[in-house]
Image 1: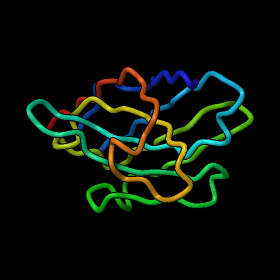
Image 2: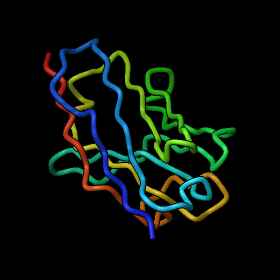
Image 3: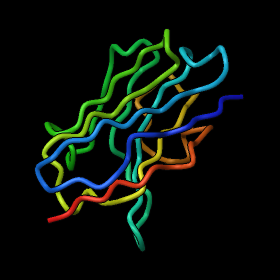
Image 4: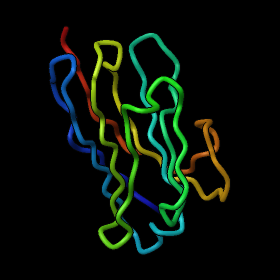
Length: 124
């Protein structure tokens, strides 16, 4: 069982940056692939990025490639999403998730555990 808690969301102007954190409970954090998703009102949950258990492999959706960076610190049981050059269309609730898969997982159903989400609002 893994419990995830996101933090770091807020209101930022277009072009600004935010760093989201995802704190995990449990001693098995390092065995999970971690991912970040977002969901805007009236839209489906959108995959953003994933990082392997070791941090050695990362993958990004085209919509955020070059602007967002995923990372993890297994010693702190925490995953991160650094978001730069934010745009108004990045406004959404952002979720972190943990997957027991060992491959690149980009679909919500591939993830076993989810956080409660943190709101990110980008003003123009």
